Length: 135
Image (cartoon, rainbow, N blue to C red; front, side, top):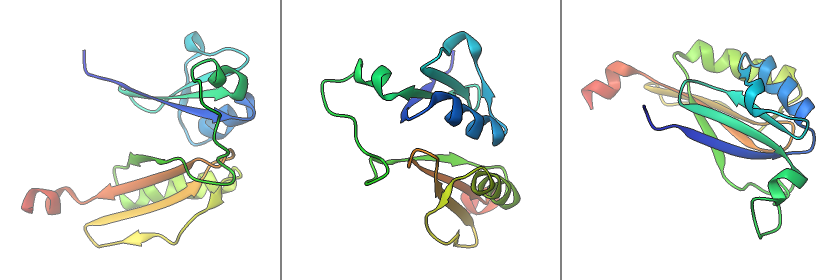
């Protein structure tokens, strides 16, 4: 079985965050979701766990960060093409995300990023496979 990554994100409302991420085309896994938690499948090996504040508080002894005021890190997702980067970023903005910076275009690499409804920095990146192979 391949190693998986589960990214836990604190959200104000699991329902609203679920609507946002399923609006981007990702799938909710009902088996691992409840009223305060939503499991969003990005791929076979990547899952976002959207946890309301009280739920996340049960996993840590530290205070929950205010992602509307600061950045705790970012979630970077690869895309299959420049067009897919633009499609997902445009959908996110239409669903209520906030823009962060102008698109990054290095020719061999293209990316856009935004803040989701709860202030998490999400990055979308495409890299040209031919440029990667050429080193």
